[in-house]
Structure formats: structure tokens, C-alpha cells
Length: 215
Length: 254
Ligand SMILES: Nc1ncnc2c1ncn2[C@@H]1O[C@H](COP(=O)(O)OP(=O)(O)OP(=O)(O)O)[C@@H](O)[C@H]1O
Ligand SMILES: [Mg+2]
Image (cartoon, rainbow over the protein chains, first blue to last red):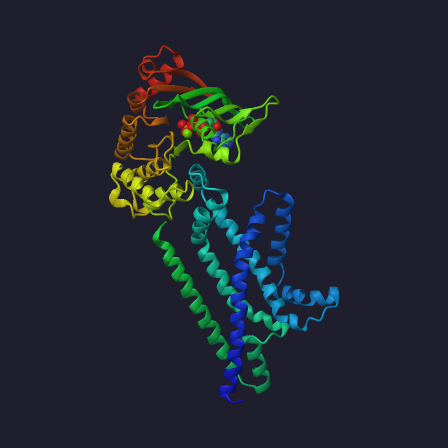
């Protein structure tokens, strides 16, 4: 295989990896926020269900979770799952990362001084206004470094999609290495992940700087 | 006209009864100071008056309207919905530690609630905010963030923020106790100026001389009850042993 064909194949893997990444971020951050509400709920049943969900998500391998999500419809309903590969990956990553994000949101929300809520209440802000205008912006600033850590881990975790033979970057690289007995695809893959994370880290640093106008 | 009436208020935290059958009222234009030793329930009574704590018994009225009352079964019923909103718009509270919103500029701290909660006209609100800032000597700090201000400046912003809601009564919970002596003077001057404009105020304070000078009436509280309630002159010449003991302690600390 020529170097350019190899690069072509690898770059289609890169596009798929990027897809997993963005879909997971877009879906798991809001889901994580809602899960954190459940985790902090006064309703003990809801709270405990969410607690179990979070501990299972954090206590079992992501790769296993991906496989379970993928085979679940087939094993349970005998559904044809061939077209289900990509949705399964996105669902698997999303519910896993939402659990981690939920704990980050929770720690951020719980770290907010009660005085902020009280001041907002005295000024007549409704509960939702208080959360959206006063609490959440400050929580985001507080948790941004932890979010950055998770996001960087996610970039690397996307390679776990190889377990469902999804043709993302790592799966493609592995196949070419096995077939052509060349090490080059691994190097290309390493550079790709590194550059991807470099960009992610810079973007996050930019956000952190933007929010550093106050303490 | 009574702005605030609190009748037979009871408040407990678990088994600890902190407010034991306290009644007080504040008339329009009146300035009431509340003094007393630490832990006597001064903050708690303010927090009950401002709905930050729920009472276990008694009633609270603003402008004659029931904000909370106790029914025949002894359950406390609070006003809800629009009625509660209307009642709550009567009062403002200045906290000991300011509680400004750190991510909002000084101007936005002051104007955001009038614009987005009270739905008032933006230009009108900004004009009022500028007037208030001018009065507080902070007009040049409108675009600053709270973290760029001294404690005294932050407290003045928080007073302006409360005033911009046009409350009928303003509560202060030890507004100077987080501040250095010089900064304390700044805040006391602001409150003095408000007194001249006949702003109705309830002030919890440890500044005895200030309480004496600025108030129409002083309440001395201890262990959840009102020991004495009278004019400043009478309070500071009281025959009551407990009042004398408390004020004497302050005198000696001097
Ligand atoms: N949220 C709470 N939970 C339990 N106990 C409380 C709570 N808030 C206040 N207390 C108790 O109630 C009593 C009265 O407290 P409060 O803060 O009203 O006193 P204070 O007169 O304002 O004192 P200080 O001058 O120190 O501010 C104290 O014994 C305090 O420990
Ligand atoms: Mg207090």
C-alpha cells in the first residue's frame, strides 16, 4: 500500500474518531448535568438509582459497556444490530461520560456558597433564573479544569471503539499494521491523537482564560 | 403605617429553640437596631423576617399583608406564588459578607434583578443605578468586578444593589463586622445618609455608639427573647441588670 493510500484510509478514521468525540461531548455534558440533579435530588429513590448508575459506569470497563450496549438489542429483542454500531458507540460513550461529568457538576454545584442562593432569593430571582444566571456560570468556571481532564481522556478513549470494529482511527491503524507489516500507521495515529489533544487542551485553556476575569 | 409586623415568632433548629415568642414591628421611616450577645438569635430573627428561614410559629405581616401565619392546628402557612412575590418585594437584606455575584460587574450586580426580575425599563434602572453609585461614591467603579474592590466598596455595592429594588424596608445583618475600622466608617456613613432620607431600616449591629446615634428604637435580645425594647437614651441608661451587664461589657471593651 502506498503512503498516500494509507493516509487516505487513516484520515477517514480520523473523521470518525472526531465524530465520536464531538457527539459524546455534545450529549454527555447536558446529560451529566441532569444526572447530577438526580444525584442531588431530595427524592431518595431517584437519588439511589442515580448513585447505582454512576457507580456501575465508573466501576466497570468502558469497553465492556460498549459491547453490552451494542449487543443488548440483539440479545433482548433479536434485533438486527448491523446498523446499530455507530449509535451504540455514541450511547455507550455518552452514558459513561455523563456519569463522570455528573460527579464533576455535583462537586461544583455543592461547592457554591449558600450566600449566592440567598442573595439571589432576596433579589427575587426564580429558582431557574438563580441556577442559570448565578450558579451555573460560576460552577462552570470552578469545574473547567476537571472537565478538561475528562475531555482529554475521552480523546484517547475513542480508540476503544475498535472493540466494536468501528472504523475509527485506531481500528484502521491496527488493520493496516497487521496487513502490511508496517509500523507507520501507529506513528501517524500517535501524532494524530497527540495533536488532537493539544488542540483540545489549548481550547480549554482559552476558555479558562476567558473566565479568569473574576475570582 | 406598619411596614413589618412579627407576632409571637418561634424558631427552632432541631431541639434548640432559638427564637422564643418574639414580637416586633417597624413603622414607616423608623430605624430599629437589634443588639445582643453572640448566639442570641439576632441573625435568625432577620432571616425569619426575610424568609430565609421558615418560622415554627407566629405570623409575619408586610404592609398589613400576611406573609406567614399559624393556623388553628399550629401549622405555619406561607404566602405562595404571586402574593409571595409581591410581599417579598417589600424588603431587602444586606449581608455581613456582601454576597455580591462575582461574575457580574458592579453595574450588572445592581441592575440585573430590577431588569430581569422586576421587568423594569432598562434606561430607568441604569439611571437609578448610576445615581445610587454616585451616592455611594463608586460611580467610577461601575465596570469593575467585585474582586477588584475593597470590602467597604463591596458592601456599598451590595447596599446599592438592595436599594435599586426600591424596597420599603432594608435589613442589615452586621454590615460592618467583616470590615476594618476605617472601612466600617464608610458603611456607617452610608447608613446614616439613608437614615436622613428616612429609609426604613432594621440593623443588627455590634457598633453600640452607632446604634445609639442612628436608631429611633433599640431592641436588646438575649437567648432568643427580647430583654428590653426602648429608645436609645433609655437603653443606654437602663436599670435592667442584663442590659447593663451587656452594655457595660461593650463599654469596657471600649
Ligand atoms: N442553620 C442553623 N442550624 C442550627 N443552629 C443554628 C443555625 N443557625 C443558627 N443556629 C443557632 O441559633 C442560635 C442563634 O444564632 P444567630 O446566628 O441568630 O445568633 P446571633 O445573635 O446572630 O449571633 P452573632 O452575634 O454571633 O451573629 C445559635 O445558638 C446558633 O448556633
Ligand atoms: Mg448574627
